[in-house]
Every structure is written in C-alpha cells, then in structure tokens.
Image (cartoon, helix red, strand yellow):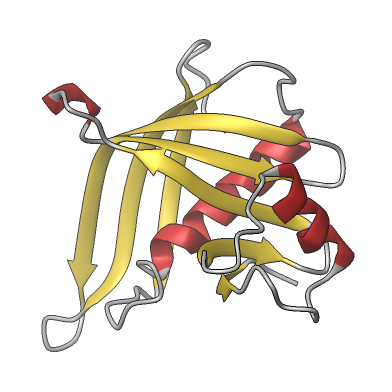
Length: 152
C-alpha cells in the first residue's frame, strides 16, 4: 500500500491502533482538531506537518514535520530549495518537482529505510496539495541531507 492523504478525526473510533498511538504521542486528541496526515496504514507510517514559516523572510520555505514509523517518532525540518510545476493539457498542472534540504532535530536519527519512507510521505503530501482540487498527477521530491550534502 502507498501513502494517502487523510483528514483524520481525533475522536474517530475506527482508526488503527497505530494512529491512536500516534495521536497520543503527538498529543493531538483535542476533540475539535482535525489534522491532515499522509498515512500508509498497511506499513504503519504517518507524516504530519507540525509547523512552518516564520517572521523572517529566510524562514518562508521552512517547515517542521513529525514522521512516525513502527520504530520511532522523528522530528524533521525541511527548507524548500525549488518548486517547479509543469502543465500538459489545457494549462492544468500535471507534474511537480520539488527540492528540499532536511535536518533531523534531536534524537534519534532515522535509518536509511525510515528516510526513504519520509521522502515517500512528503511526495504524497505535496502531490495532493493539501487535498485541494489542484492535485498534481505526480510529484517528485529531491531530498538532500543539510549536514552531509547527500541525496536520499
């Protein structure tokens, strides 16, 4: 199964044990707070945008994420380097190419498998454009470690 974007009701009883635990870990159980998640229910993986931007112009492309897998919760910060959209038919955008640097905040540092899953989740989150009518057919994300300069 692949990642899908969902608006998750914090009080829903039909969510998986993994999502209930994720909401508890992230302290997101307020009854009135719905959150957009990129979720892979089969592999128990979830991505939640926890913040972004800032008062300084240099912070405009900065975002914070919580990524959870069966192993751990990771706090990852990204900074967008480029965003290009390409149209095909009637001016509608079909493909989006994004490039980011990332930095893991705190411990633990995700292993290679977890970083690949984070990239998959980020691609789906960005492809759907927050569940809007402007969803792209495909989205390709380039992810570069800010510390080592290596691409994931």
